Each structure stands twice: as C-alpha cells, then as structure tokens.
Image 1 (cartoon, rainbow, N blue to C red):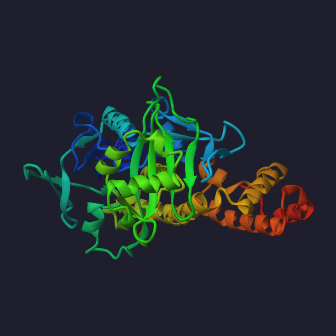
Image 2 (cartoon, one colour):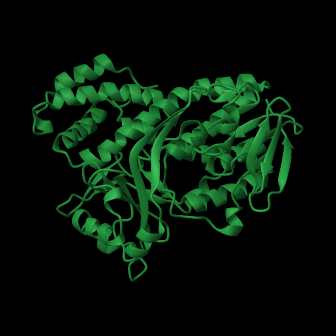
Length: 452
C-alpha cells in the first residue's frame, strides 16, 4: 500500500534514526514533518566529545541501501577487519571479525553521517524543523506543542501519529508516560566513557593500523580506538564511575596522565593533545533502557534509543535503530490502521531489541576481560573450525549479528547453544588439535538446525 500524499506523519527527533525514517517514509509518499530540539548541524556544526564513533554493519547497510544512501555513506567510512588487541606488556594481535575482507564492519563519524542523512531526508521531501523541542502532547486532540528554547517561540502541530526517534532522553516517551504503562526500566552500567583523539602523523597518515578496531583490554576497563577518514582515531576510555581505578580516582589531569602512563603506556604517546582532550571532553554515562510497551494505540510509537537504548559494545545501537526504521516503514505500508501497524512493529522488534541489549552487555565483558584469555582464544579457534565444517549450521554469533540479518533473538538463542558446545569441547584442552572433533560434530548436528 502506498499512502496518499494527504496522510501525514510527524517525527520527533532528527538524529540518525529520525533522518533515515523520514527518508524512507517520504520516498514512499507520506507527508513528513520532523521536529528536532537542537540547531541544524549543517549550519551550526556538529558537537563532538559525547558520542562514540559508530560501527556500521550489514543491518545498517541494508537500511542505507533502501534509502539510497549507501554510496554517500561508504565514501566516508573506514573498513575494520577485526580487533587489534594491545596487551599490557606491549605488542598487538589482530583478531579478525570474519573469514576475510568480505566480512568486516565500517567505522563512520556520527556527525558527518547525520548531515548526509538530513540532506537525503530533505531531498526526499521531508520538512525539517530545528530548534523545536517537544514541550507537550494532547493525545486526544492529536496536537503537539514544540518550543524554541532560545527565544521561547512556540509552535503547535496537529498530527495523525507521532513517531518518537528522539533518543534515550525521549520527550515523546515522557509525554506518553501518564497515558500508558510503558514498563520502563533503566539499568546504569556503573561505567562511563571519555573521548580522546589520535591525530595524523607528521606526514598526514594514520599513526597505527587503520583497518582495525583497536582495544587495550585491562580487565574491568579498557580503551578502544576507531579510525576516521581524516587519518585520525577516536579513542574512548571506558572506566567504572566508582572504585579503584575509576573516574572518581582521577580527580585531575595529573592523575589521569599517571593512570594512562601506567595502564596504557603505548597509547599515551599517540595522543599528543591528551591534556586538552581530557580537560575539555566530559565523562558520559552508560546504561540499558528497556520498555514493555512501545506505542500508545495508533497515536504514538517509539523506536531506536527512545525505546531500547543499549550500551555500545556490540556496535549495534545504530544498526538496530536503522532496522527499526525499515520495519516500521514496512508495517505502516502494510496496514492503513496506525494502531495495528504499531502493534505489529512492536511485536516484531521488541524481542530482538531485548536480545541485542543482552549481547551488548556480554560483549563488554568479552572485550575488556577475555580477548587475551587463553580459554577464550581456544574457543574462538574451534568456532572457526566448526563453522568451516558445518557451513550454514554452525554460524558464529558475531557473524549472525554483524554480517547477516538473522533476527537478533535467533542469534542470541543459537549463540547460547554454540557457546555450550565450544566450552564442553575445549574443557581441559590446550589446543584445537586436542579437541574430539567427531564428538563436537555430533553435538552440532544434534542441537543446531540449518540456519534459515
């Protein structure tokens, strides 16, 4: 079904999800208005220091293809073949994400991506309104009030349906709370992050291997670095908020420098502007937001971080939000009734959001504690062997999440089965050559159906 041009949708939030959804809906024929509380980043510039570089994988790429944006985005993306692990004693080791360069992820800059997507939304026919914060909603009258926080100018918008793409601090979610039990739960991670930057070297090139996500795992905390097209790296320190070490034990620049010199000795020389970066960039928190209900009848629906904010350690927050956009666009096209479309969208996406949130939390422990652990490395080696022996049946969970569009819930469930097989097969073994492959094969065939 293609909507008539008279049918309208009002989006709250012009970030990545809002810009993509506006593009998809406008291209399908909807009349689309998008309201964003911040200024237009295309004229004011993008504010950094609070957002981790984004990892673009197959789910996100599929959404960009549908919106006609793949070529523009990939022109400013940097390939990452795997994790480059930097152990405490120095040196480094590349752990590939997939089999070869056909299975990689891509580092993209949030600000430039958002700007390209806003241009695409306008080109598709969506109307963008900046400096307009959602200030209140009369759901019975289907009327929303937006305010410019700079001059207090107010705008009232009549709507058919409100689509909440306005992030973890969603104003639409706040407006929905008195009208519907959302079953909202927020679980802080207890860890925060601070950004730094590795600039280009003297010749203008990358200072370290560009085609990798660099990790300095330190057991309980870590640093990572993602490459940018300007030959820079965005470095992010993840650290507990309390305890020792923690952000609380780094009260000043001198303490921070001493901490890096001790625990990230090979990273500190790569950040010549460490003092300014540490001083100017804030510490931001991390947590998991989950809801038991995402919609209010046919009047409003939440998606992306507004419905299911997650920690960033599987690189799937943006990819999951983009997949939400594709699904909601599809459900709105399939049903002329908003209530039915929103309910079907939630039924499809909520179990998958729950699954990727759980996997993202697990990945934090893996990245900071296990990537240089001998047992884990043996399990990874056996995982590759079993994947080759049972193609389409034993598929590594990371591959299902990042290189395929298998539902997250399916990847989560199959991953548990596969992990149990790996742990059992490697128990007490020093290398893959000691594993009873015939017994492992039998477990794979007994417990895993071919992946659809």
